Image (cartoon, rainbow, N blue to C red; front, side, top):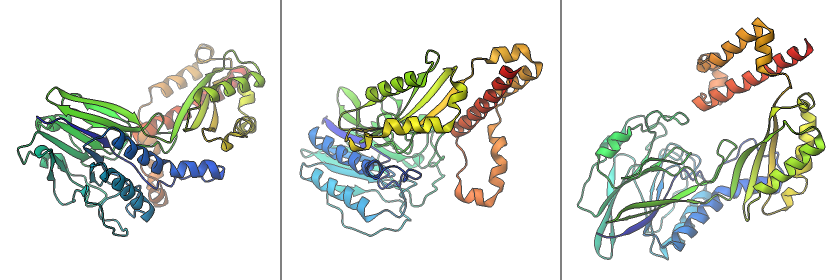
Length: 412
C-alpha cells in the first residue's frame, strides 16, 4: 500500500476585515489585515518543505461570498508555487464562501480541484502510477446548508485510501451555526481512512483512528480565537495514520491574567505588566495581548477608573508598533474584587445571600436576551448569541452586580 502525506487546513477566511479594530495604529492594523494572507503563505511553504503529495482545504477559504480578487489571486499564486513541486490542492467551499456569491471568475492551475456544490463527488489521486487515494468532497451551493450531507458520502472506487472533506458541525457543537450537521458515529460507519473537517475554528480531534479532525482556522482573528492556529500534517501508511499540528499564524491572540493579591501599587502593577509583555513576545510573530487583573485587590476601587487602565495600556504600547515582533496590548480589564468577599456578604445579609444563590443557579441566559431579538433592527445587525457568548454575558453581569454588592458591603 502506498504511503501518502498531506496537509489538512480549513477556515482560511482570507480578506477578513477585522471589524472594530481600525482605530489601531496603521502599522498594527495592517499587520492584522495581512495576517490571514501570511498564514496561507506559511501553509504553502510548509507543504513544499515537507514534500507533501497534496493539500486539503476544507471550506471557508474566503471570508465572504463576494470574494475579493486579491484573495483569489493569493490562493492561485500559492497554488502555482505548490504546482512547481508536484503538489495537488483540493478545495471545498463552506458557508462563508458558498458558490452563490459574486466574484471575478479566473482560471485555476491544473493542480487545483474545486469540488462542486450540487452533490458529493470523488476524485482519484494517483502516485507513482498507483491509485493511492480517492478524495471525496462537496461545496456549499448556498450559505445555509442545513441538511445532513455526510450521509451522501460513500466509497466509489477501489483505492489505497479513502479521504473525505466535509464542512459542517458535529452534533452538539455550541459555538457555530449548525450547518451540514452530522454525528461522529455516522462518519465512522463510512469506513473512510481520514475525515478532513472544517467550520469549527477551535482545533479538535474527534476520533484518533480513523482520524476525524477539525484543524481550526489558520489565523486567529479576534480575542475569541486565542492560541496557535494552523493545520495538520497527516501521513497514511500500512502502519496506520500519523498526524501532527503545525502552527501557521502570523499574529497570535492571547489573554493572560495577573493575580492582584500581592500587588499594592500601580508601580508594582506596571512591572508585572512589563514582565508579562516580554514573556509573551514571539520571534517573527506579532502578539495581541489582553490582560485581566484578577483576584482580591486593595486597588479595586482605583482600578475601576477606566482612564487609569487606558493610560497604563497606552504606556505599554508606546513603542510596540515600531517592532516587527510586537506585543500589542488590546486591553487591560479589571476583574478584581474589593477586599470584602462573597462569604462575608452571605454571612452578613440574608438579602445578599439569597441574591447570590439566585445568580449562581441561574441557567436560562437565552431567555434573558430574547427580548433583544424582537427588535427587527437588532436582528438585522446582530447574530443570535452562541452558548459561550451567553455564558460570557452572564459572567460579566454577575461580576458587575457582585462588585456593586461588595462596595455596599464595605460601606456597611
